[in-house]
Image (cartoon, rainbow, N blue to C red; front, side):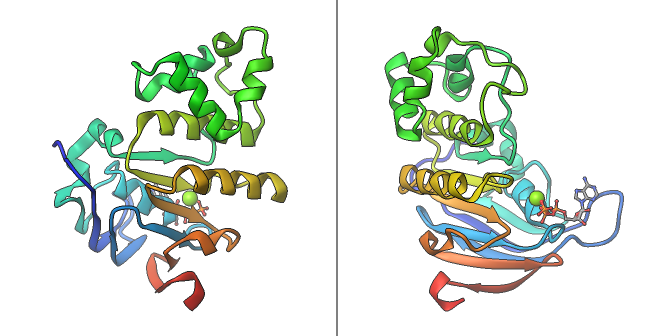
Length: 230
Ligand code: ATP
Ligand code: MG
């Protein structure tokens, strides 16, 4: 499917159980995200947040209800979904190739100048400038040359180059120290201001910048409102 214009994501009475177990890990979730809207999804470990993320991305298909982008169910997009929706995971995957190739994965036609621009936006320009081989520096698969926060910035740079309208952040700051975490949250929200954001997190730090906050407990949506109402 090909979509044009601003995107609305609609989650309609969605339930899900994994194929190997009848237990519903999500039950009757309803949610609408208008273009540019920012939502935090909070909940304990095991409450169903990542399952919801995978359903939104269309990697899983709902067992009941529908998740649609401008009316089209997301599972139908398959790989094309990455034209509309970018995901930053807890441990971003870097490939065993150069920095520039890692950043161009979503848009191979990006120019060197565009790559430097996004590196500047995410706060990595200086670090890469100091490397003797600059953008041609090899990255090993685990991305070991970079710290956790730097890997997240690389993932953000990659997504900014792709210019996708909806960004799903699945606990991207887990495991970072509080100062690095806050700096990263600030960068995310500064750089993604014009995007629709779905931010999965297990704590309250940073949620003031969101339009909506929802809580998921044991697969059910238990609270929904603006940050000031909660
Ligand atoms: P965390 O904060 O730890 O990341 P989460 O809220 O993202 O947790 P999910 O990963 O969505 O939670 O898991 C929700 C429930 O679904 C858990 O009980 C989990 O054990 C179960 N689950 C997750 N993945 C699978 C799978 N592939 N097969 C079967 N059950 C699964
Ligand atoms: Mg999770």
